[in-house]
Image 1 (cartoon, rainbow, N blue to C red):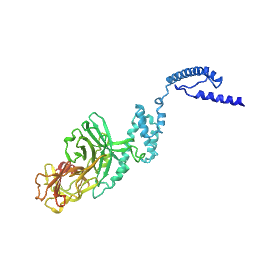
Image 2: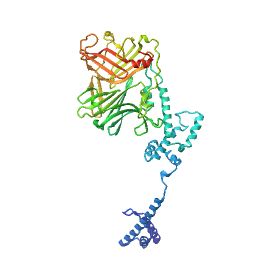
Image 3: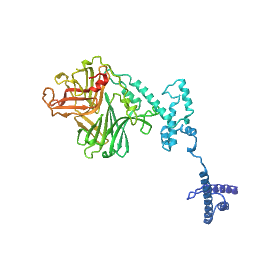
Length: 509
């Protein structure tokens, strides 16, 4: 019994010694001096253990050399597999992993792209309903994914996706509010599309920085997006800033898109930052100076360092979803060609116009006005502009106050503030058919007027607000009422470019 137990323990001990790693990383191996010494008993002298160790090490070195020769002569690798097998493997990977694989080499890039986009043509998907003939064609195409040229499925998917997004958004944006002339469900369209906005700041050296928006506020007829942080690049090195809308490529796979998932970029506007400090400064406080870049961009600089503090973009609802989703990363979305509305009485000038104007900041509105039945005679054309009077000096019943304090709120991750006499102005001008004729959302500044007004003299200091773009001008005259400490609008005039009017109605003013 004792002898049997001893043999069993001896064999168990020898097994442990054979599996125990040495300090150098080699293993004990059976055979030669090591096995002979262990078969003699449990106890081994130092010399015997050294001799056994050297013999085992030599055995392992010879084995590694043989293995190395085997792997060197073997030509099997992942890259050598046929495309059909690789596509089968890629089928089990998610989109993010596939995009990472696309960075390995050119072949993996095209295979991964083809795999990602070819799955979008599966007839089981509910996004696109196809008839039986189309199902058959799709099934036949799926059988020959590897036979298509590189990038074929990517192009096909983008075409399908753009068509699908257009159709879905067109259905949502079809109902129009007759009061504002804008889509009723703009907020719903923003939600279902997963739309977000980024700015791409580019250095003169070509390096790019992409920043996700930090804050977002939806107003009655516009959206305000804010970016701020501590890692802005130096202003002296910057050349341009691109404002882009971003939507997830795989709309049905991620309800909450993240910056790490594949997204579609749509360029909205491009701004020049190389001469920012030479552009129009519209206001300041003890910490910040703000500059305006058309269309609708506010750039805040620190007073001391003259470096970027925040960026604020103001986008009007008119064609906002289309501009933010249907363009490309390099080319903005182009509006469809306009078919002129025939003017049956051009001799009477413009008539039946409607204006909606808001002034706000940080969700607080100081002006919310609607003006109906605006008109102008044909003779009110001067200096290539058609003059449309909204509030007249002479009619005191039309004068409107600005409610509360007028100022522009700003915020960073450390400080926040309030710049007096600045605000965001949203203008929506509808033509006689109720169609949006001129729309914008832009920062404006109330400035002291040193020139005499065209109307009667008022008791109090006079101020004005001016806005100009390629389609028209806005001029507002205000009076400061010291007793109530508020501004009173005593004149509001729109100047519409004659070229815009002629293009819109097919006239020849």
